[in-house]
Image (cartoon, rainbow, N blue to C red; front, side, top):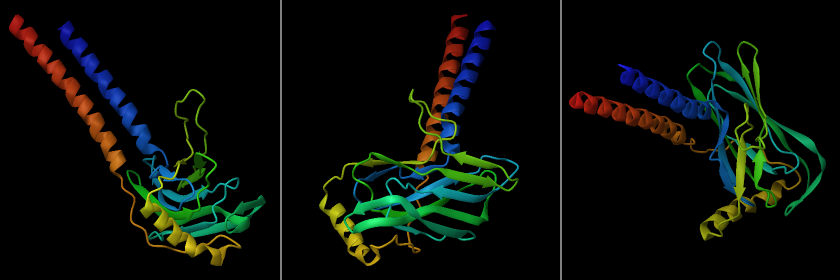
Amino acid sequence: MSFVRRAATVLAAATALTAGLALPALAHVSINPGTAEQGGFTKVAFRVPNERDNAATTKVQVSFPTDHPLAFVSVKPVPGWDVKVTQGKLPKPVKTEYGDLEEAVTTVVWSGGKINPGEFQEFEVSMGQLPKDVDSLTFPTKQTYSGGEVVDWADAPKSDGTEAEHPAPTLKLVPASGDDDHHSAASASASAAPAAATGPSVAPVAASSASSADGTARLLGGAGLVVGVIGVVVGALGLRRRAA
């Protein structure tokens, strides 16, 4: 019986570990995909899950960087949601290949819709030109619930490498690959940019929905870990019975 109790303890610990690894990663507001090329244009989705079981998410506010502003930002309409894009004057003009940028998008707010318990919503944005002199951009996000609670996803990464309690959605920037197709796409996007060089361009655009496969993969991986532990425990019990 003591062996059985130990096996049950191991199984319970493995299950708790799996839940701890999978669930927090799914609960955070994130940006997907999480990587883009420096100097290019990209389309991302801000993925917002509802963490509460007694309230709906009714408002999402994303702040855009002003130290490395993005000259061209457009949003994809989300059925049932209103969107407000705010432009603001930058602390100091930023030089770009299209001229000095004095104003840029500072916030995008989606409101009027609902993300119910157990659901998530993706808010898609097309943006560029991405800076070439930094390796990441952060987008602090405020998530408002129907009960009035506001969760501020704005924590910087911890110095020890562990994840913060409310990490800010972060887009990692990597050097351009030099692929001809990439440069052709970037050139095509940039060709329309000079017409709006005096300020950010904001207009609805069509974009495909970002994949939620990463969340599914985490859950499947966690489930596999639990099944593996169960198999080990059952096998050990069988050997013990045969030995007896």
